[in-house]
Image 1 (cartoon, one colour):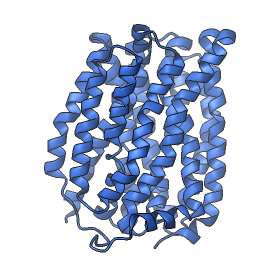
Image 2 (spheres, rainbow, N blue to C red; image 1 turned 180 degrees about the horizontal axis):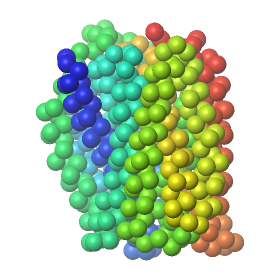
Image 3 (tube, rainbow, N blue to C red; image 1 turned 180 degrees about the vertical axis):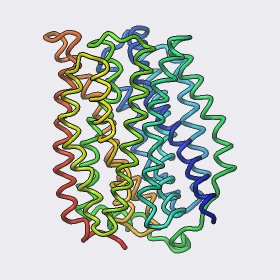
Length: 410
């Protein structure tokens, strides 16, 4: 296996992950248009952006990952890509809350098979001293996909309507699926799969490790804020700064892309450099990043100038994603190689059930509760309250770092 082919495979995996987050995050930029068209509340939008997706995404992730540890990960990811993209297209045909809610659940069903197998593939494709950077590079799909979801979703909705945005990006993902299968080959596993650890035994071993729970809950706390802010920022810029749909798309898309890519890569580089000598660094790096992000977000939300707001939001947008490479690498090393997909899925179960399931709903519910007092500014105060989750996350990562060496699998 050549390094050139590794890079090609990684590029295709990044592209698939880009569609994963494009389809996941496009709802945020379209929320205002959907709310007006279907007559929804902020709480309902929050449920569609979080719980509707997270229910099946988290519930199916573990059994699909266990399946991936014993069969073709590339075929599973190909099917998952087709499924979630198809349901994204169907979102454009919804005529009410429950239809759209069910379609978003379908997106979650598909995406349940799209991430954990990819983590395992990358860990088998790349040697140990390159894994944090490779996993960080894979995580570029998050800011790129989020940015493209904001950009394409907003521009298509402004040109045609929000329904066309769902249909166009969904069908594009369906077309990518056969290309993915042709390019990405199943690599030799670092540990042969002929005599795997039984799933139940592997789960018991993983769940008995305190560092797993601290890492997962720390990531979940940060994701409550991360997913919530990402989903509601387009609405915040509309309500508090009076920005139109196209302007919001360009502003938030560029901010998410630039800040996110820098933050993800910085986390991967720092993880590889510091974590090789001291595994605890894989968790201390994101803990520090979250503590730095909090005051930056507070100042950014208060900014009245768009130029100042762009710079102030750019910094915490990057810091918010520093955790991806180091933390995912740490989770991969809590289990033997043959259980990596399952371990990743267990981590994603906790992270997304709490972070994604609660995050977007929390900000919407607080906004609804504060609207009688603050009116259009209620969302600003909802964002303030949600930033406290960064402190919780940093504390949990710091605690996990103390016991990580004990639970580490060489």
